[in-house]
Length: 122
Image 1 (cartoon, rainbow, N blue to C red):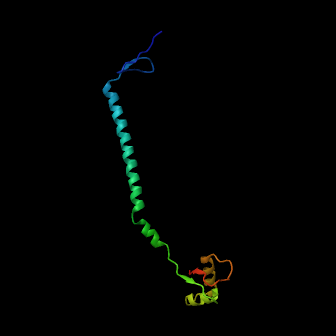
Image 2: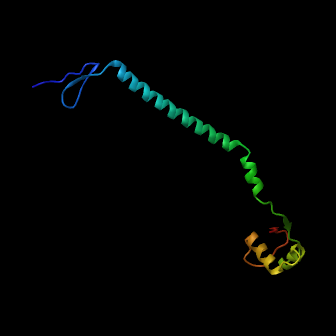
Image 3: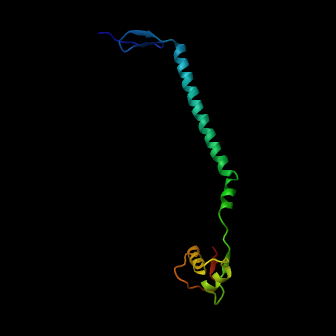
């Protein structure tokens, strides 16, 4: 029975034939793996820095500018949705449609208002 012994610079092919592997071949393979690993780490670092830069740049200002700032009014005693809509409706616009927009904007399920209530105008 033959026993295979491996030396530092030798390896066996699956057929049992001894093939010489030089130390420089394994060094090249190791160097390629290290370069590949280093490249992967560098790429991950770059992606991470890119994400951080994107987070802290002025993009948030652009997004904030895209959010419309709604005008608010405070309901006075005697105000109704109709009276508020009459003052705000554009020429030619149906007041009933404006009232529906007003109710939807404020999440109102009825036309009842209370003095001091704050309404967002559409």
